[in-house]
Each structure stands twice: as structure tokens, then as C-alpha cells.
Image (cartoon, rainbow, N blue to C red; front, side):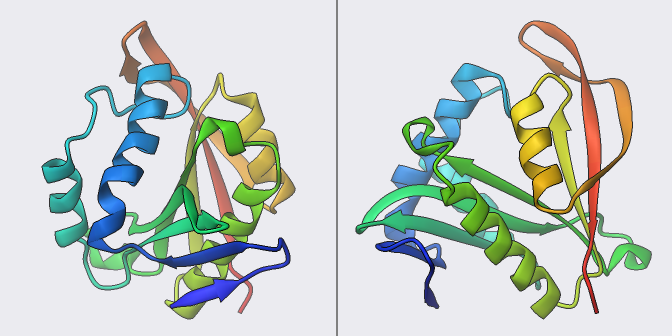
Amino acid sequence: MANKHLIPGLEIQLIQKEHFQHVVSIINESIRLGDATLWLEEFSIERFASQIRNQEDREETYVLRLENQLIGCGVIKRYSPKEGYNFTCETSIFLERSHTGMGYGTVLKEFLLTRCKQLNYHHVVARILASNSTSIAYNSKLGYEIVGTQKEVGRSKDGWVDVVIMQYLVNE
């Protein structure tokens, strides 16, 4: 499924095996910087491939391409395996740092939110490091609202970290 968007040359498509290596390098860039994820160990291709293989129904991973160059990925995953949460998911995006602040992440996130609606999700969660004010502002701009902060819920290489929980209610 390839989609064209308002930004010329920008395309979103379901991830394919040939994308894995580049996506892993993008995710590992965020892991090394330690400012946007609580993954602490860099991904191998095998570890990432296993995650994709183990995606459940209504979980999807997409790549974002600009002029045929892969610049990011976006994920929709179930919030919890408990049946009562069947209408709740979580989204994440990763962009090459050289492509942030240009509107590409917004296009990808809006695409994911549209897919969430098509997949019959009602509630979308974003978990963001409290120190990542840029991501919090970005998600707020897209209609997410802060519903709380979990104090010292995660551990980074530098110590305990707080995580802001944001939610987006899908219009029916």
C-alpha cells in the first residue's frame, strides 16, 4: 500500500524485508542518542525481523520514503494483550535526525492516526520521555493531550526517567 501525500516525493508504504537494515539504523540512531526511546540495546536485523514477524492482527509498521530514500518508520501496536484494551493502541515514529523538523513526521503520524481509525481503534497512546519537549509539543499539535506523567517509570543509561503519557481519541 503506497500513499502519496502533500509533500512532493513523500511516500508511505508497509515495511518490507528489504527495508529492515535501514530502519534498524534509524532506530539505533535514537538508541545511541538516548533522548527519544527507552530501548537501551541497539537492534540487530534479526531482533527487528522477529518483532515484525510477531506483530499481531491490527499491528502494522510503515516506512516513510522521500524521493525513494527511506527516512523513517512508524508503528501501530496494540496497547495491551488484555481483551478490554482491544480498541487501544500505541503509535511510535522514528525519523533520521537529518529529516526532523521538516513536517515529514507530521505526515507520517497523521497517516498512522488514519490507519488507527481504519483498524477500529478508539484510543491512541503516545509514551514520551518527559525531557523530550519537542516530541510533546509535536504530539500536542496533532491533537494528543497529556493525561499524566509516570515518575521514574523507566531507566536510561543516565538513570531514572519520567514518561509523559499522551492520548488521542479517534473520531468516530
